[in-house]
Structures are given as C-alpha cells and as structure tokens.
Amino acid sequence: GRGTGIVVVDGLVDGSPASSSPLARGDVLSAVGPPGGPYRSVEALPFDDVVEALSGERLEIRAKRLVKKPTVQLTVKYQNDERPDDRFRLYGGENIRRAMLARGVKLNDPLARRFDSNTLDGGDCGGEGTCTTCAVAVLDGADLLSAPGPQERQMLAPHPRWRLACKARAGADLEPGETADLVIRVNPRQHAEP
Image (cartoon, rainbow, N blue to C red):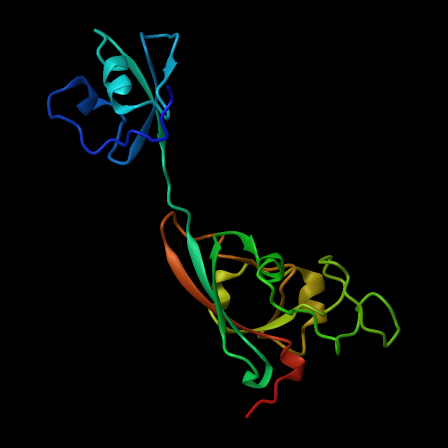
C-alpha cells in the first residue's frame, strides 16, 4: 500500500556516486529507475519500499528541491487605533488587497472617491486601481512593495507614503527563506495624525 511520507536527503556519503551528483541536503526523492528510465515513483511509499527501489546496480534518482518561500510579516494598524493591530504572514509576491480581504480586514474606505468618475460617490472598483478605496499608509517596509505604476503615482501624489493595496505586491524580490516586516495603516484618510 501507499504511505503518506516523503524521503528527504539528510546527507551524502563521501566517495559515493551520489556525492558528485547535484543532490543536496533537503532534496526529496521523487522517482528511481535505470539510466534513461522507466522510473518508479517513490513519493509517499513506505520507507522499506523506497530502500528496495534504491537497491539496483545503476540507478538514476529524480529529486525535488523544496524551497522555503520568502515571507512578509504584515502588521495592519487601524484608524485612530480603534482596534488592536492584526498580524498576518504573506508569501513573497502576494497582493496586499487580496490578502487582507481574505483574512477579513475591512479595507475599503467609504470616504474615498473614484478616480475614474467625476461623482462624489464612493465606490470600490474591484481591485482595478481606478479608485482609492483600498489606499493604505505604509508606515514601515515600503521597499518591500512592488513599484507603483504611473496611474497610482498620479492618484496618490498628495500622499507619498500611501499605496493602493490592489496594486501592491509584498516581498516579490525577497530571496527564498527570507523574512521581512511590513507595517501599514488601513483607511488613512480617517486617521487623525498627532
């Protein structure tokens, strides 16, 4: 029967054929077979079955390299500190607006006016970057965000520390396994500066 585990390379024996291979500590064995195949999957097999699959004379081993995604620790502050801060872990490249909405943050500012109309009505554009209902003030970690486009820069010109959450991605340039901190305030129009 199939198991539920994986076999992770913990080390390579000096002088063995594997020691000169690209295998590295942390790789996961995926399939084994004679040179050129056919290959037998060893994923989720019981350990004894994996050992048996590795018992051939000449084998090729297929492996998967697990890479820890970069993460951004997002701290969300609320207007006038009405509620305690929320903290979320985002993965590198994640969209700020989608991440916050998925975690239940009330993001849309009712005082915001749509950029693409001359009405005074508020209105959420649905993440298209044509309103400013999702504007956030970046208090720390602005360098972690994707660069703003020309329309966003124009819309938020009076507020250089603000970003449209719908257009900002966090930590896309971080290295695998790297972690960084980002602090934002939602609904910055409603926050009374000291």
